Image (cartoon, rainbow, N blue to C red; front, side, top):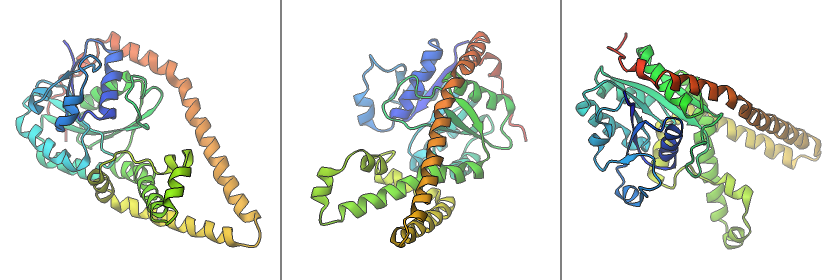
Length: 315
């Protein structure tokens, strides 16, 4: 039986999901859809590993997994349509970085034969490529009532992409993502506004290079999407923002102090911590051999086949 997976939202992350899945399982029936007509118009059918569907319902018809990869502010509308129109059992996995609100939407609009699971790839997305998830973590956020077979189905799909599932509760996921995803958006916006608001912006713009580019890079260029990301997740974000403001105030005090040693010690701590973190990220590449073995085992089991009968929703 051929596995069918639908990817709704064909930004670079959506296309990377398709490339990674197709590379491990060429026989997958992959469908892709994007509500943005310009995205659909720009697709090069010779380069995409899925069948592009102009109609949302055609894309999800018969799918065992639907990756909901749309901007946060439109996910509720899409969930409502899926809940009303999809008749077969399926896993609905959203990639939004904030799960409290998407889980609430899912519980209110999805029927019992559709199983919501949050799924956040913990990876920086540049250009879509098949090896984007190799050795990376992929946060998996199930609801308490999620059936084990539905969770296993999504887990095996993530493993096939080369990623390692990281199981989190909703509150834990949202608090952690606020620090590593949403807080950098705010700090980058503040830096951009300070620099661009300066009378010397013309000179600054000509002189800016890699550090400034990295600090002011946003995950998307759509202000509406960024606003939704920040406001939907603002409770944990505000706590991290308070911490950032306190630390900036502390560093300011060290900067104006007469002695340079305290500032140097603070920077030494930051540099050492960052170096250890980057080394740990590099070491994760060593896990790829074990992940490859796991993918081969899944493929030998004919790729998810035993997981299709997920049954009714377990309370």
